Length: 78
Image (tube, rainbow, N blue to C red):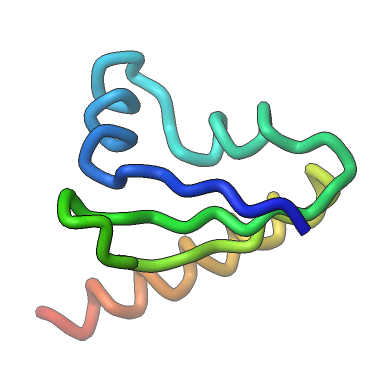
């Protein structure tokens, strides 16, 4: 599995500038090979990682699961 390190702050700033979602970018990266995306802070400390799946179908399943978990976390804050 290929490993890709991403500076989180720069990545999310780029998303804002391009008015794109991270899921759109992830979809463009799919090529049939799983990839481990490692998101780093400015001090190169690991913030989180994500295994990019081999297919768009799997990516869409991840996206739905992420939305569900994110929504549950937000509702817990209220």
